[in-house]
Length: 331
Image 1 (cartoon, rainbow, N blue to C red):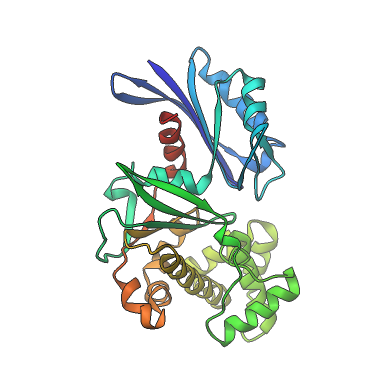
Image 2: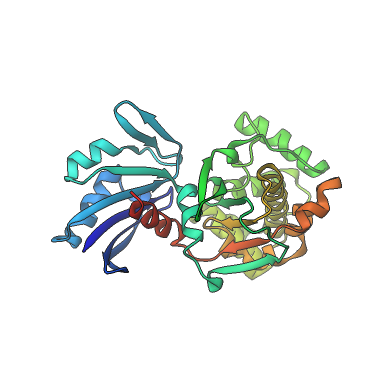
């Protein structure tokens, strides 16, 4: 009997679990989700979680983290992209008496986790014609924008983490050219993560509001100030048909589709493109509309190429945690 400790550490949520392996079967013996911003460091979350798993002997550890992993002589370290957390694998192992800790990028973990999912965990946007063992790509908007490429290795897909979400934004029409100028003025740079994220949706809304062509409703203005701006905008668009919120979400979806198509071309993703992250399941009705796929397929003489690529939305929020468990099991 062995026990694996795994975590999926993101800017919004941190999920941890302990999985017991025995005789070829696996069973979750402890699992908890925490609000990341409520803690000053990951070690505080881990300390709160581990007492509930007292008595379990940990044999392998893997933490998936939203940030680029650095390999140094002292071991693996990472600065969480949208949190003030610095995480060191060796330091955590010493502090908690753990075996060797492995750090992987959160989208690398999602890449592993996709193989553990079943059909009900996906919503199909485009059936396509997948090439067996062809490269795959994963993109996901949440607190930030993650991207990864999956390459077939012997008997499984091996994910390659990237920081492609920070690539320069490429506008495709006059409105998006205006948006690029707005972002350069407001943020100093126009990147995809500045748009395709929770904060990015709020920026799109602010950009369209500043243009002045559509008035802002007082109800939505108050909701934005009172709570989570992205959640308020999404709710206003999907539930209340608010004109300005609808415009912001429509623009978000078009740019999301365009960048997913860009990634499909860059990765040669003939095995499929997977839309992950926390936002996609919440706006699945919008993603099913034609705007996302129209932008995905609008690639000039490569339009027929991307039209053959399967596109699926990952609906299971635990895919990253599942991937971390799988990675830990391969240590």
